[in-house]
Image (cartoon, rainbow over the protein chains, first blue to last red):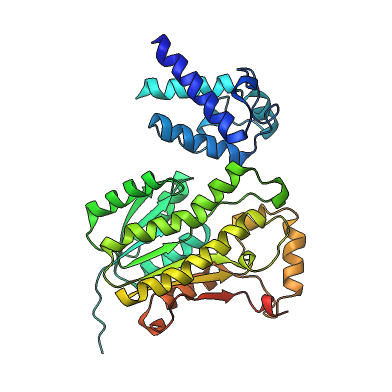
Length: 97
Length: 250
């Protein structure tokens, strides 16, 4: 179980790294995608597609951003959507399957 | 003479919102058909379009597949194959964009936009061929393919690629009885246009320079699609037809 969890973390970080062209070593769990890593909405779409592809899961519209809370402003989402939040989201999705 | 209605099997990528929805609606209104409506985002709107199409006594199936990914296109055509062994019409409306200067487009964004807008079309056409014995393929492009539009560059280069594909596939597939054409649309009142930076100013400027005195409607585009899939356009092959109220003439 621990190994699977670590694999998810590694893979998600690699996906984010590839998409945003940031060295894996520079991506920390607490990094906020939109604020610290300079991601844009199109990047999040790219990341979502790659996650779907790599893990064989389907992610609905806004599901990743809504995982940090519903009815939030863009600014609030920007503050809350971290790498670890995305990792946790993917783990939950895999567990639900 | 009474027209014999045969059931048309139609696949529309990006077929559930905006221009794609109007095209789907118009085809459903005018033909006996089975519609395959591909989409990626917004389940509610997709369901709404399905209901509209079914209201014309056409069958409709929603296909939620991301056409930036060839594996997903494979899956989409596998699903189509469960319903039918032939396709008569493919309309490619799916497109994504990032409204900003080209100098700020990142490589991953370039890839994603190109893969949906242009490569996705090519691969859909390739996957269509085993199912299409005579038919029509129409791709929806835009004036950005041949004209500078500020903050539109990421879409423009993909539309240029799309129009090249239309031209070449038009020639390659005509001997098989498959007509490929494109529509180079001027500014149309879509949700995407409303997200355009300074959209109000852009629209005002376009209006000033458009002889027709108005921007395009979804129906303008759908009407041309209807013509391009009809026998009346039988001798039109590999063309990207500009429809813009005369804007590009000024």
